[in-house]
Length: 608
Ligand code: G6P
Image 1: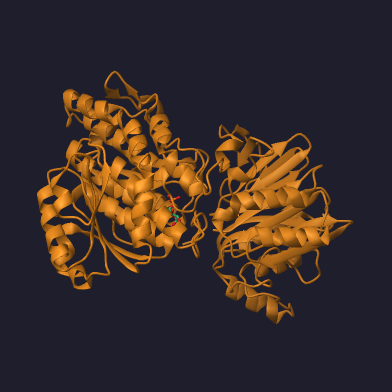
Image 2: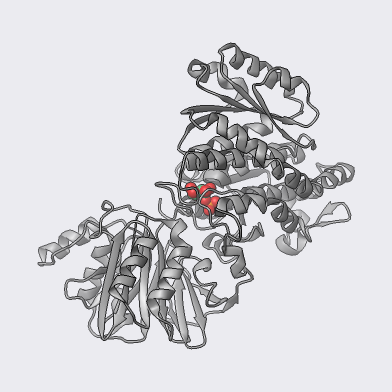
């Protein structure tokens, strides 16, 4: 949700900023801009549209310089226009800044500033920050920034340049992510690590309220009270090839095809001799694990659906009372976490604002908090008691695919581990399940090899306007995820229902133009779901069935069948999600949609 980047060093800053913005474009892509120090002036260029549109403008103007800040926007306050695009300047052109976040008291601040004669050029909350900063500055940047922090309410990651100060830019963060980078004679900042990977792997994460001065090869950091802090430098273990498309036309397709490998890396080192071993990561003693009675799992979007899948096995393999909630709901209800509660917060990015707030709430109520995330240095990972990493590598496509696979794998391992420690799952059962879990990477790859038949199916249904997705039990969250993928990237309306609930409403929508995608693996609920298929068929809806290899019965009832290899009934989500991702991908491609950057969406939702 908006990406920011900053650079100072010997390279041409516009090139570094453009490269960084392209790598952050998944965060927002309705307009983009940059400010570059050039011959003592702060030159600002902005454009509506994608980073590629900004790139053309930068080339036309032949912009050059060795220091700059850039921004790619996902509009919140103020429509999509050049005036509202970042960077924003004060009215004297002394300060320029880019912002990710929302200033909640911007109306009050704007009124005060307007009353003192300040003229605004945009409708944004961001312009208020820069106009205010210009009035607080008395020759000492740190002092002005400390005063600025006192005045701002809301969330922000900021990169700021002061015309008077050469070779240094400033950063602030509260509630929105910001990572600093350093290399010999160079300094960087960015909303996310992939923007830095072409230049450095040495990073430092700003904590809440911290202020940084970034200069050539040097990072200086202060707390929100102005006390200098020594920052630890972390070395990123992602490599740059992980952030490139390779031979694939889209990141999403590449990431779907990486899922067998994601499973292997997520399982690696965590399964030994038929048992799950998370002791080196979680360090939980039996007494702590035995003290929990409740399990709250909280997440947003696709991560929420991963949590719903896990809910089924956690209920089955442990004796904990499991509750799963959407973060934006959890944070405002009377959820009653306490010292008896393990709170599990699932977030690919570890930066989703609602998930962060939910975690802080549960923690303040006494819960023990665990993050299940893909990003080691993320805000969520730094705020919780313990972290379980997905190890999926960077995900660039806005629609989550491989991280969903990593999330369910990590959550299944957690469920088995808790089952063992609480003695609710026998060693033999754990062993049997792990045997099959270790076969899943191969079975995911077998499923991926069937892509062509899914592409053909998408070809037959690409013109449909509405779909219904049905599933029961552990397949219900997969129906939700399949429908979400279709909506997100192909803009086709898709509703997902628990198959048994269809008769309570959605059946009224059924007619020959509305296909029903039914997730019906061979499990204990197979016959029940088959009855629901009959009901839909009687309303003349085409039935697309996602079924298990060797299930001959289903061919008699469905217009088309997509198949996955057999697996244990508790593990079917690892396989059934894959064809639905591919179906959404090919539907979107056939409909000419922008697959990696769907309209109105952002990969990381860092505002409430
Ligand atoms: C956005 C993304 C989704 C993602 C959700 C939660 O809506 O478009 O793909 O599932 O945020 O993100 P998180 O990083 O918390 O998993």
